[in-house]
Image (cartoon, rainbow, N blue to C red):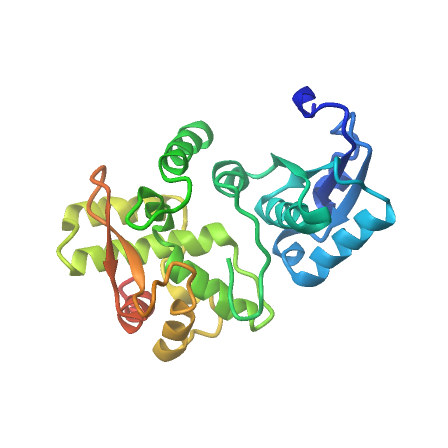
Length: 271
């Protein structure tokens, strides 16, 4: 049930259409629901405006709250709508996927996608929560940047495919990004060979992507992939700040990496 601490305010559920169809009565106490396209298709400007217009048509006031009911994309879109409607209204999240539970529901994140680029339960959840609490505002040199491990190349792949009308599951893209990061760490002498072997064996045991072609039917050129890497939100000035693992249980470094170098590792047949 929705948290009673939110008080008697009006609650509008914004739900993934597939989730809503399967559990239409899962949230007693919610006044009404707005259905979103399933998955990543919800995270675009048109859907955001449609939700805000629907809230206005329903005369939803500033003291109301939005409640997301779905995966990470649903939470991102709902948070974005709550942040701009009536100059900001309350928001709560009910994540329904594992990735949303341990990632997208934490850290105050909300976003939509643009064509030029983007964006096990309990243990991972606690780890991320501790990191976010230690670096709430993503300060320079703060530990929160470590959560970006594997994400730079993942975002580049997602953006490349999105411009071609195809969606790549975020978890699969990040898993491949982890593999690339480990290989880069090995090449830079940051990670021992045996650690990389154990790391990749774990990814293989879960049938995670081994090659970029597993995610991109039309494999991008090194130049094209490097261009998408430079659009990453963690770029500072001209520096591509990349999280490099140091070994199993040993943490990470944040290092400047040339976009072409990162793209080259992602395209390497050995990855």
